Length: 248
Image (cartoon, rainbow, N blue to C red):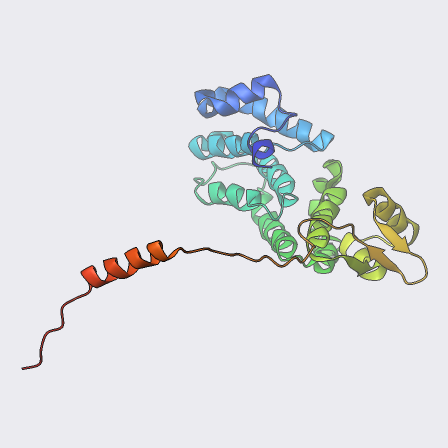
């Protein structure tokens, strides 16, 4: 997992060279990294380190700042929960100098609180609340202008929910699962089948296959201490103990 995060198998050699070397701080390469970001938006690929390199360049070169790029980076990082990608991006934004004046309004100040709230709901596994906020009028601008362009965004959010369910459940009611995935009816059945899970039509219960996270197994730890070892411990304690000072 860590290897895929630091060096995704889909990363092109040119981007690998930029991200791994000193060229990541060369402002003339920002357009290459931005094009790679939009490739990620269109292809469902994700490369956190390459996107962080863009934010670092914006930090050092405020004149390069592009709010649409920043918002798209945050959208991609949003679906990496529970991993800390979103917070890593935010930390670079907090240190970014104020951008130069522009004729066009900056959409980031308006959308950043919404993105942060959506991330918090995902991180807390409050999936029904996430979908309620995401479908609300307050997030209309984000949906209509950004996430609609991000191929597979909603499925990526569902994958976050699936990871949480796999870690916590061996079985779950289909209605409850549907609120986590924002799916119902035939769409939910098709998604469950795609996951390889089993839906009992009579009880409406979805069985989650066993995995290391949802299996409760007791672990017995046994330590054998030989008498010779115990003798050394007692002797060492006796040598290091403080002398008793008689009362006056």
